[in-house]
Image: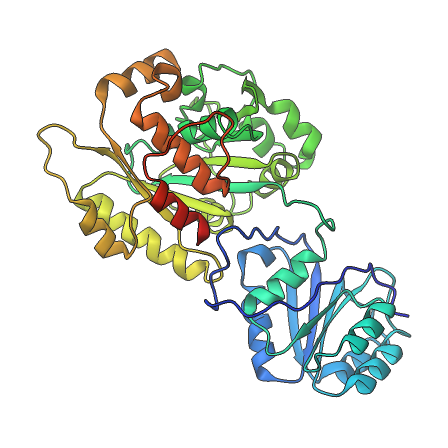
Length: 426
């Protein structure tokens, strides 16, 4: 018997859209594992190649060879097996089972096996399960079928996925993206009662500490400059509590040192937060370098904040195009318009944004100097200054959209329930 950890899944029907997953589906990323696939058709090899480029398999090393089960047997006669083996066979059940029995003689303990075949037969499926095969996919397979299968091997059975990472970034500097991110996180914690953490990634000039009226002695700098110490316990000690269900991983906001980071500098921090927090809100600074690109591409959901002017429209379009290309198997990013109806300022209409980006804004946040100025100077959230203000309601609806949750701890009527309902179903 192939010695694998048993985890099976019945084949799922093809999705209407070949790339974008259902809006409420959350596939937890795979850890650093090695995956070797042995294919018999170019179609399956192409699907696995595309899956290997997906953000959720960004840490996995995927290698593809042709030849099916026979090639796998020859490859592992004198070599150790990887974490995951994917085998495609166009033969009948007896051919598949015979090949697996031979491969079992060379398969290391802990290796997990995924089989791709054309036979939709419950008897074959049961025999595969009995031999310890982790999953059976019926070809032709789609990219998301492969991603879902590999990632599912490393998720606890019957457990709700945790650690949804939401990245909020401004299309231009000074558009209020941090304010939007902090208020959404407040709504997630206070109204949806979901444990959340705000991570301020602008180490030199971050404002999360000011907005929440916090001055913690330690924060994200302690983690990013001590990569060898990063684990869930260490990161948890760096968090400061802002409110019930809400914690802050603050930026130092000092200029004593340069904050130059490598592309993967924050990976360990995000992994540690994802393991313990259902919602991780990333306040991403308006920069474009290796680590900000990686942060946005690897996030589960992205919200772009823009003001209604030409520079914001251009930058939002560029971000949209880049992220849609880099995240082919994800739904498109969201965007909102902030500080709308600023007195005496000519503005580009929301319809023009929608036409250019081929998507409607998920929120239009009107300018209110008194409200936002009071909140900023007092270290408060909009809901604390005026709980019934329409902007507080907008932040709540953004929280519902980005977390995929419609239930609210405190009953409130929504401003845009039809639009929200449609977006939650995407």
